[in-house]
Length: 69
Image (cartoon, rainbow, N blue to C red; front, side, top):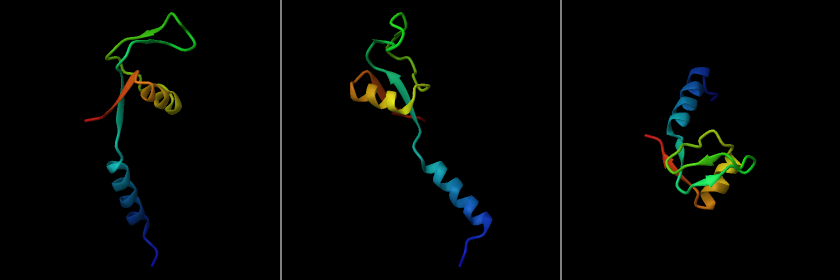
């Protein structure tokens, strides 16, 4: 039997609320790859970076991924 629109909506909200949200915080000082005058300091948030860039920085140990509270 097909779900009602209300059931679909409730299921979607439940799924969204269980998704883990992260903050990306600088753990090792580094310079911006396109502007070497820009320096990212330890403790600074870099959430605005794109997903690929964040994954690269986490892999290289320059950024730490933390679960949002």
